[in-house]
Length: 232
Ligand SMILES: [Zn+2]
Image (cartoon, rainbow, N blue to C red; front, top):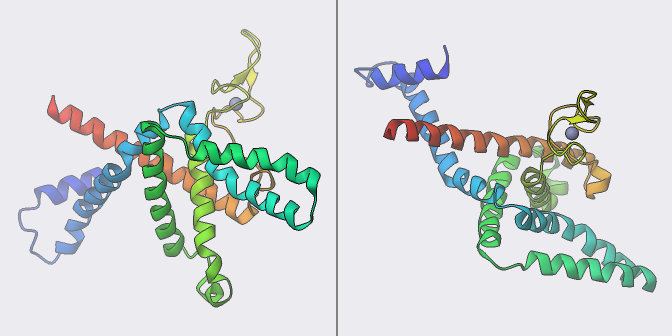
């Protein structure tokens, strides 16, 4: 039975206090949860996603700062002055971008904070760190959740394929061929883990969370669309 049918069935059930109470209430709860999920962050996702390049720059700077800072600290430890001179402006530019003022940046920070909470919750529920491994590497969990949140949000906010500009095709009419980078999907592929400065395991989690963001946006659009139709 499709969710919509279950949902309608639950809505029209005359007696919710029968044996099937829990069963019938499930679609209602699911709908309420979806609605809440979308309202908590959905509107904000829309607001930030379509704010434009300023927010995209900010999201990339947030995601890139840990790696740049680590590289600089490494150069300081190794007393590599040339590398320090090279990296310091990068770190400073990143910090300046991260400190950006304005309402778009403020909306981004709110979304980023909420997204981090959601990612941490999902990470715990899905045992990104296996229960057996907690005693040994549990202390690494907060940084893992943060990196996955940063990189997934940065990718999601700037996900139009760079090679074809989101058209899915290369070349000129009539000799169009499928974009070699996105294979026609119009979405920028998630970069290689090594280029992002994260592990391949983290890159897989980032891909999952990009999917979650897209699903939240869709949920929000669906709920908002239904409300609009209802209000007509
Ligand atoms: Zn493409």
